[in-house]
Length: 229
Image (cartoon, rainbow, N blue to C red; front, side, top):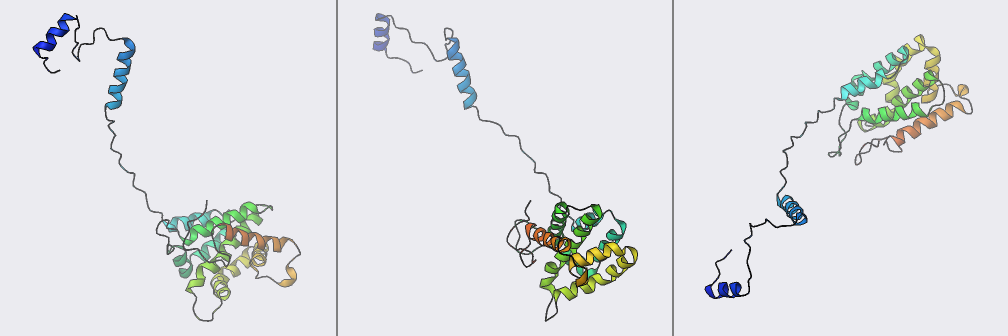
């Protein structure tokens, strides 16, 4: 506090006025003390603890491929699917990150696994039928995955069937009933074996699952959107 002039001091003494220094708080009411304490706390800047970011481990697409295959409990279907994804052309496209998705990098196997899970969930049949539609959805989804790699006038359907055929023939020998259902679900069976409801419903479920999982209507992978939940 600044020193008062002699004239002002004399006037204060004349009228009996006493000035209290800022640090003199002996008679300060309790409410004022609380207010002053709160104000002091608010004026004190918060000290933020330094947060160390947790490193995000990159996703290994080969692990996703393995987990996708191991979801199938039936050994014959699992062996068939393992043989398909082990083909060099299939393995390469499944584990190549999608282009144009810098903000959300996804692999083709992630889209296909999502679609297969949806198709299996929507299937109202037994476990084996659900595993057949799971496997069929993965194989049908390969059409869109391989489409950008096919050049010339070659049909994508022919390319996929050529790759899958050896494993499918082994499934014919090991589990003909499952192989027959798989062929019909993929449209590779005989026309006279297709009924009026079950097989068309299976094929429609596969198409809807591929679309819902983020695949385009023509079964091609999107390039400008992330994988939906």
